[in-house]
Image (cartoon, rainbow over all chains, first blue to last red; front, side):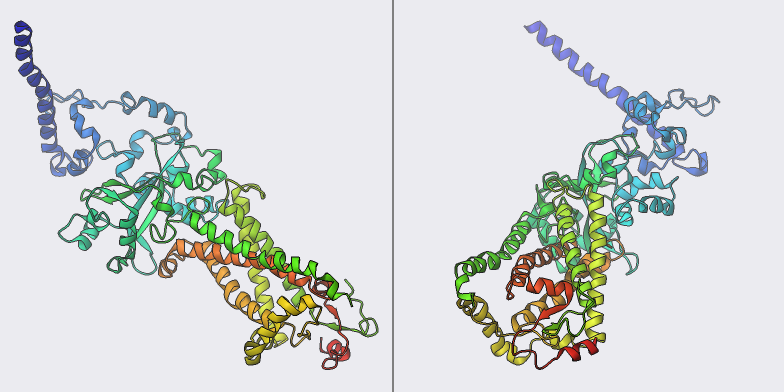
Amino acid sequence: MNRNFKYNRLWLPLLIVALWLPLSASAMEMDDCLGCHSDSDMVGDELVIDEGKFTETVHAEMGCVTCHESVTEEHPDDGEAVSNSSCLDCHEELGDEYMATSHADNATCSDCHNPHQVHGLNTVSGPDMNAQCFQCHEGPDVMDSHAEWLPQASLHITKVPCITCHTAAEGYDIVLNITQKQDKLKGYRFSSHADLKEYSGEKEISRLIDIDGDSHISLTELRTFNLNPAYSELELGGTLVPNEMSHNLSTLDNRYDCTFCHAAGPGSMQTSFLALPSEDGLYQRLTVEEGAILDTLYGTPNFYMTGSTRSASMNIIGLIIICGGFIMPIGHGTLRFLTRKNRKH
Amino acid sequence: MTEEHSDQEHQDQIYLQPIPVRIWHWLNAFGIVTLAVSGAQIRFPEYISLLGSYKSAIYLHNTAGFVVAISFSLWFFYYTFVARTMANLYVPRVDDLKSGILRQAKFYFLTYFLGWENPHHPTPDSKFNPMQKSVYLAIMFVMMPLVSLSGIFLTNVDPLRGLIVMVGGLKLLAGLHFLLACSLIAFLPTHIYLATLGRTPTEHIKTMWTGWEDEEEGHGEESTNADLVTSR
């Protein structure tokens, strides 16, 4: 027993050292690399890395040498070419999915994703997602080809990221973003962190909506935000984002049929998120109360999707009105039938 | 259709519904029924698929809305600028409001059952009884323009977003469009039922098809057939 105890006590510091060593080495290496590669004067525009953007990526956590294995302590004096690992070494499944599409003939991974700036779905906005697509697909062409068959094509294209339809993801998340008025003709644009800071002042920008600070947005908080005259220039815009990563960029038939989103019924509209911009340009999601999207008027006054966001209370009022239309035929008709003899002249 | 009318043929009839009015009425009727069915599919796509795909329901709804808006314009243009009877037909007079509505309601809900005559006798210049005037005024001058306008907004959300936000948002607009549509749909059974309250159940319906209505005895003096035929 005693011996076991000693054995444990001996290994514990060793374990800590063993775990700490590679981490510190990798952190040091990244700092070393960025010491030169964050300065375009030293390495040139082609090899410069935007440090602010890179350190926020998941790739930064792995350190530079994980992908650039051949780099030695003597770099760049050793004259060795720097190796790049393939994206598919880690992203095998997504890669296989992508390589089977016709996109793979025209664009490699890095044509769309800068590995030193890439982020997960949850932390980027719809316009950021579309920025990759618009590198090759020009806006007017996209608009024209969609307008041939898609009702309100401009609304769909400006509101919904391309990959919501051009993906094999089987579901979507509803994401709300704060937008704000530009000048009269240009409509609304996504508010940045700095924009919202002007409204929140000393407080965190999340407190504009998340009044109680519990990192969860209730329907009451949404209504309060939407009815607050101080925020009359701000609007909550909603969009649909795929709920899982997929690189099958073909369009599934159900997207052409509109059923995927519009015939999904209010059941699919229960879960939603509010995405708030951070200072670094990324987004942080807060959960929103179940079903808040379906609130009749003030929950999300400008997020309405025909077929899916209908309000149950509105349906009941409508049904009562329509039933009211039958009072006269049924009531009057019955009395008319009973008194028919009076009208035989 | 009995358009081959001669003065002789329509001796005991009055020409109540001129062709533009009849074209408007049936276009409107067909359009509104189409709008109601396609609208129901657009709102409840997982339960209703009468018209095929969701997209076809949307296209049909938009087209029917366009047809109804055009026929509304025809109606408005005809009564305002051609017949020039819009105000006279649709705006209730002071005595309509003071006593006419009550008199007409008393007929529909009491004296009709006792077998009395309808106190209102339609002529081309006074087609509607005071109750009809008030209801049609609300439908044609308030509800139809509002439902059309909200429909135009809802089919152009992206270009009109600024205006939509200004009037209270997309949900308010969609809710208004839906409730107005329900009200117009509710009017249909009442309208069709009241159309059967002529001397025979099909009398008024035939009139809306042929234009001619049998004249009631002792009520044709003020507008003779000769006047009406020449005025067409």
